[in-house]
Image (cartoon, rainbow, N blue to C red; front, side, top):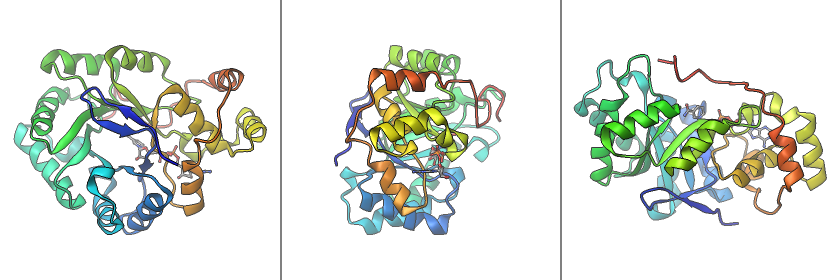
Length: 277
Ligand code: NAD
């Protein structure tokens, strides 16, 4: 299977399916990422705060896969500094590169807007500089509401390539997705499987899984892909890692998509970006 790429607004190609490593301990991350690379994943989503950039870097280095065939994302953590300046953003970025053992990442994201502190404009300016230096091929944001994105664009003229947001059938974010489409920003879904909580046991999802001879997780990932989202499901279990990759050989029809659309009930699993610090 080869993964389709989505074009980012600066011409960089991003795999539509990647592998997330949130909550995977550093000493288990090398094995998990190695399983993912063996299954065919080429895009890995980590973050400074996950504490496993070193484990990701080890798996990348020992994989033998050419750097240009990999797509690596990491994120600047909220409270790495109390007061953001250009210099401490660059310092945090250097620390991430160091741990990953890389000379560039493919995508660097601001993890949360910290709207309460109102400091993301200074960070976004420094991100522009990192992007121009070639050490992050693309830059973007995460958990930004449209108003935060709009302000960042107005202040710098630089449009984020990606906004990585909580998005799953119980929290579909239609307005944010429409805003992204209007501004040529790729929507990347975190918790694409609803973090493996109630969603995968939902009866509608179960019926669709039976209809297509697939698992609930595969149906949910297929829904994301057909909407155009980038997805980064997480698992530490090799069989599930492979299962989550095997989502390109079937198609949900319009009725299936409508049935899943009806599952939107506004359930956020993570923090609210307007208040999370
Ligand atoms: P997810 O929706 O990917 O769910 C992962 C959980 O679902 C697993 O721990 C497991 O319990 C279960 N699961 C996975 N595959 C399964 C399968 N095939 N069958 C049954 N159960 C299965 O949730 P996530 O890890 O929170 O999100 C994915 C990635 O998104 C993270 O690893 C991380 O990289 C990223 N993320 C980003 C943010 C952010 O603030 N930007 C926040 C959370 C996660």
